[in-house]
Amino acid sequence: MRKYESLVGRRYGKLVVLEQIPSNGSPHRRWLCRCDCGNLHEATTGNLNSGHATNCGCMKSPDLTGKVFGHITVLRRSPERRRRGDRQLVEWECQCECGAIVYRTSDQLSDTKERMCVSCARKNSAAIAQKSAGFEGGTQVTKIQNMKLSSANTSGCRGVYYHKKQKKWCARLKFQGKLMNFGSYDNFEDAVKARRRAEEEVYGTYLSSLVSNQ
Image (cartoon, rainbow, N blue to C red; front, side):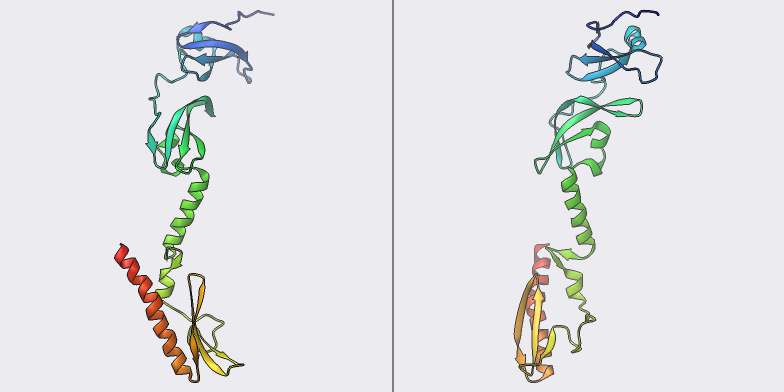
């Protein structure tokens, strides 16, 4: 059996060979190297001897340390590499605005979808969904602007119901989780008027505040 010379300890440019690693079915011997920048890099004997492998790729990729991409800031170049097919990509250790540590490759940092941690991305998606549904500050503005009767309503007016024990018509309004009562009346029409005044007072004030804050 042919004996191959070990490359362990040899230097090739910025790379120092640490150990031989499995070839994964390839006829070429592969070596794990450490670059002077601290990154680990895998290379074949041929690439090392021919001079095609002299660094981990750090000479080609710009230093992104300190740069901000969306909601994340690059802290440092990670010593780990992310394998994508036959390629090994430089990975960056980043910090999201919420404090979470994430790892991104250079091409991921150029993707707006990757510029925040998973948790913040979920919250952002939920916020976008609420915005598209007409929510402002947790309140569905489009709903209060276009009030419709629910299937459970039997009085014919939203927020007006008949109290059997009191034998009176009652007016109420629920807004931002709070149920507000606006009196009990002998006549249905009076309860409807009370409900309409409540809508103008509560909803009108809220909608006006949204306009003034824009």
